[in-house]
Image 1 (cartoon, rainbow, N blue to C red):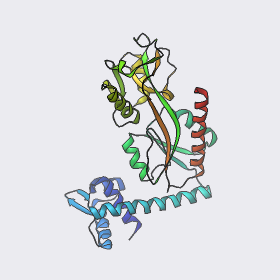
Image 2 (image 1 turned 120 degrees about the vertical axis):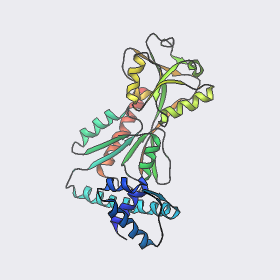
Image 3 (image 1 turned 180 degrees about the vertical axis):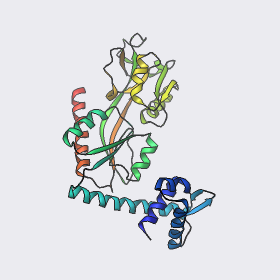
Length: 295
């Protein structure tokens, strides 16, 4: 069994299409197919059900994929550890987030403390993040809600109240707090389903007896403040995402525990580089300072 066979197998298993996998690997389709066939011959079983260009994992393939991903993860972590120990080249920190509002000050502080470390950040819906996290493809996830699992190290760094953002002049703008049911007839702007805050508030609104009427659903939480300010709709917005706009007021919910947990998570098998350790320290310190300033 060869390392290349495992890499090709994992690519085909994830995409379930030999042409797309060949394109992602920059190899010919025939070369990829032959490599997969040799792997199956070595193992003595077929790993896929084949229909044209579609390769569907069968039971043997699904079981073997778990082992192959773990093996490739261990080898990659060994390479990262040696690179970190030698210090011959700058490291790269791989990050995934479902909550981006706190990220700019965190990254600013991290860059100040480790200016030579590169970082790559992906903004993802919860399910996409779960896949990356369980495969060990990111150093850290900063997410709400937290993601649990035997292979996941999960640290709650903030309990973040969710407020209602309304424009100045709105009927609720002068209120300090409101009951959730008072929002029943309002128009909302928000992110799409699949993001933690959206799913949380939809669930609590259903318990209160209504479904929010969304006139805008997007992928960019940072855009919501501008839409609220323009009077397009009101928004459920975490406290950490409050914007110092003079034309927006933030109102508390008085009859429900409406708050999200923000967690910092990593795969337990992923090598914790010096850069990753420093990033974790920066995140924890940021939220401790935020909590003191807002308590």
